[in-house]
Image 1 (cartoon, rainbow, N blue to C red):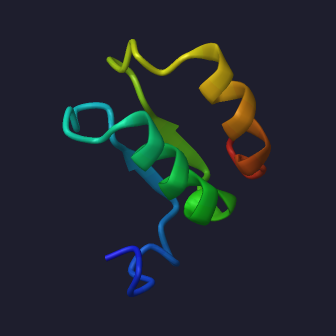
Image 2 (spheres, one colour; image 1 turned 60 degrees about the horizontal axis):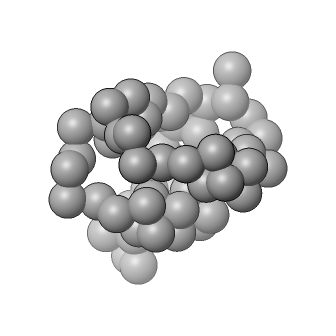
Length: 64
């Protein structure tokens, strides 16, 4: 779906209950799609480290 551009209109996403997504997969998704996001829920992901957030925060320019 990502390769086909299905997330171009995405404004908010809750991926907190997707246990199969790795830190790398979430990072790559946000790298490509976070600029349009206004909302993001990632609760319940204790393996997402501070380093992950420091790298991702600059992608999240429109988060409210």
